[in-house]
Image (cartoon, rainbow, N blue to C red; front, side, top):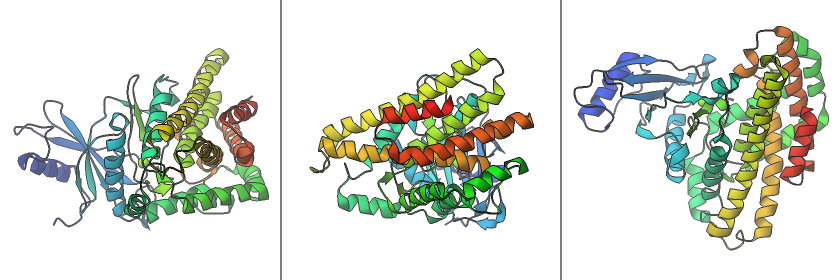
Length: 405
Ligand code: SR1
Ligand code: MG
């Protein structure tokens, strides 16, 4: 059994060579001359691309025993690599079209070998450049509804569901979300990160009892509502795209949680980009056109997600009580309210919490950036405060449009 050691590029090459020699990977031929480099720019892991002389390549991802973005002072369990591999297997079986393929996993070394999606782009970078992906909404809706439904009580027996809930207990990474999403932005905390010009606004957030109550309710649900196996980190950096393809990567935050969390996070990231474009696209007509595209993407994604779930519930529900249309509609109403709340919480935590987004932080003009940050805070607050008053998706879309104008 190999003892854990953090890899260098050399280790990555040697490891893939061993996989080739023992015929545990078929991407390369035996004469492959391998080279590797590390290019991880995420918050937690090492990520290597290993390629041969024929341009065949794979990604080798290894968990570090601490959060890379903070350092060894923030220890993290290596079990997250197992969780990520097992979520990829689960989601890959349910929705191979939109899940990155896992080629190999080593529990002791906390590493995973994945298909290389290098010919695609990361959604965040593409959206910063105002690129459009007409299939994104339907692909994300398809992925979230299938993985969500088939891991829920609508489909799994109570026994299987409990076994899976236990398989995906992920305390360290859940704690990151519990703190960064729902706690730290609402208190004074060393992890928070915002410019002094936002002090007054942040103070008003900390004094807003209704908002803090909404954050507490969202946190309680995140902690205690194992509805389905979530991806757990559905931001725009976890999605690879081109005009025909959408692939989700990085589900290391996966666990059984509330259905609304993933779709809420995804919508929150669309809205972060929407607000950022106020400072990025100077020409008004162009800006409006792109923002309309983002809003349409959000609406289409939510509508299709809901429709797929209703169809799956009518055709595939195994539990007689849940096959009832009235139950599905009631369930989805609560999912919608949760999703709006989580969407709002994502906007706030990405503005004043530890982990920001390049859509906003990359805006060079400080005043323009500040105006965007004020907008994301107001939007986030209003979504969190009004989430439970939305009875259906049309009321949500009207609320959103009124807040964006
Ligand atoms: C310390 S980790 C910070 C953030 O990066 C991840 O991608 C998650 O979104 C997390 O909240
Ligand atoms: Mg990630």
